Image (cartoon, rainbow, N blue to C red):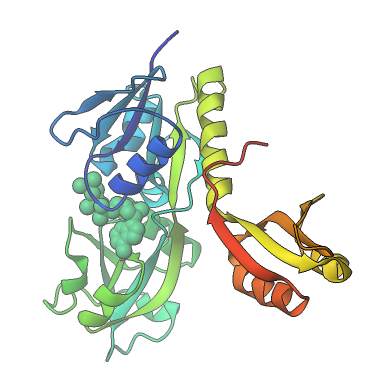
Length: 283
Ligand code: ATP
Ligand code: MG
């Protein structure tokens, strides 16, 4: 069987989460920092550790079959690859920001102004759609200091919490794109059995992350009210307790409305609620 290659970031914001995801998929490998390639001992796969900027092209050219990289990098490099799976980490937005005291108040005010960015292709497309002509200044890093240095009137950069903007006296002004880490594949392998197997493993890990396993005790007379509150579960397991008239209910609850759901369950008579993480959900 052909061994696949997956490219992930060598170091930086996506490295740790990419390694963790692959390990949670049951893949055994050393997280070599000094070596470019690490073989997986229990799956026909090799991990390539690269700079994130290089990943889209490596995948497009078939040097790597798969890659984990931010959507922002894929859009900027304008490559032909297949999007296989959103991964739910590395979330950020590409935003235009201006100094706090700037007189730029609307997108139209950007006309004729200088905008510093490391994302000239994405920004160029965005401005074109808005019919705005600005002077895009491509720089390779530390974009946030360029207005202070008099290099630009605005910047276009990745933001997650906004802390870096704030500490540089900048305020976010317009959203250009939102991004998260995605699994990409070369057109040649996107449908292969091995890739589908890996995608299934990844999906089972992602599903598990979004849900919690919950066990609770309830008096039989309140059981229907409790079951009515359980979302999207066809048949929660109901197990009799030693104490007459009481049962334990086992179910899964989505993380996103977890606290609301728990307080509703308590009001409906649930007691002794135990919540556990789930490792994998295989459908
Ligand atoms: P490399 O050395 O691999 O080229 P880098 O310095 O270009 O790394 P990082 O800063 O590690 O890249 O960011 C990697 C990716 O993490 C980004 O392309 C983006 O998709 C995502 N990301 C999430 N939050 C942020 C943020 N606040 N700033 C920058 N990138 C972020
Ligand atoms: Mg980079």
